[in-house]
Length: 445
Image (tube, rainbow, N blue to C red; front, side, top):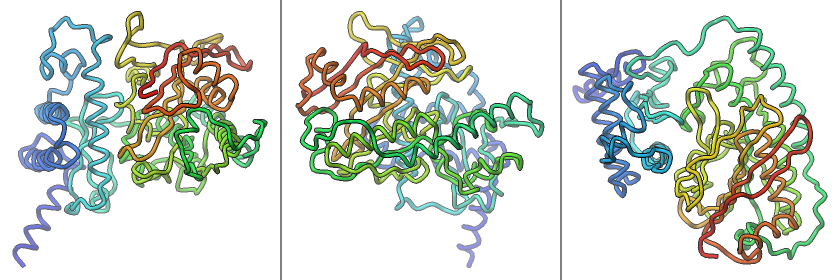
């Protein structure tokens, strides 16, 4: 009986992390215990670099030094870079941080992982180097579902909403409503040719069902208007955020049963579905919140629509990309980071602000192995809606895609280990955007 009482007290103490300062001696002890469990888990065991960075970030958070967590500082203190090194050309910190995020997501997605009720979880939010500590899902009932804590957790939003925010909500909700109609249209204008051999469809082999992960408009509204921050994948898949919509936004809350996708995601899904039919396959449309980590481990292909700001699952694969969509935390602007620049290529491509027209956006069309290498993941995403739309248009335009591949010395009917295309997209108002492929990577072609 004494053992059970001790365990209960221990769980209660851990649960108190949701309302206390992590740097206190008691909470520090529990966090460091969790850190050691994570570092000795199978996801981190094979990466000394990820272990070193995670330990450094956690210790800085506990010591109150999170304000010092700048990319250059981490590069110098953790990876031994010179204090004047070029962060635009040397992306080791960003790439390593993405690796830590990916491994944390995989660690906590492990259904066989034993957790005490109310135990703490460690997360690294997208676009930040500041570690957060959360009560595990099993402990949310005890903690009352409070928000995640950091060494200093400010209020995320107030009770009063500016008129501009409500106007944005109305516009977004109307767009989401329109997109429902597009979700029902799975026929396209692509000529039927089941025997067509064209990358990336050739990689899907004999698989007849392809999951298409839709962007989540509810999530986009929540992060832009309510929370003003991105969520970790663990938070996104949990129930806590779905209950944080104010009463006036109840119809947009996932708990209402309404799972909206964006207009561009719906149109892209329609194009992809029609294209898959021409190759003798069927698209299975899946809302982002219905996707599971297991889907990215088997032989069945998955197509992810949208960048991490609209589809958090994209974060799982960002470390594996040469051309990765990143987010500038201060202003929320998305840009393309070039993790391995070739001679003459920049370290990053920056679009114009979304409100600027005519403007420039960028997009990626990336075919990479899934988490186990048994299947494939195809990322279709842009730094804006125009970018994502252009990428889906190229993917489903056989003649244009074939031409672009041949122009880069890639066999359209071949098989590859990975394929990445980077698009530059020009748009103006409601006109159809114009795009061109400006860079590519291919392996094993």
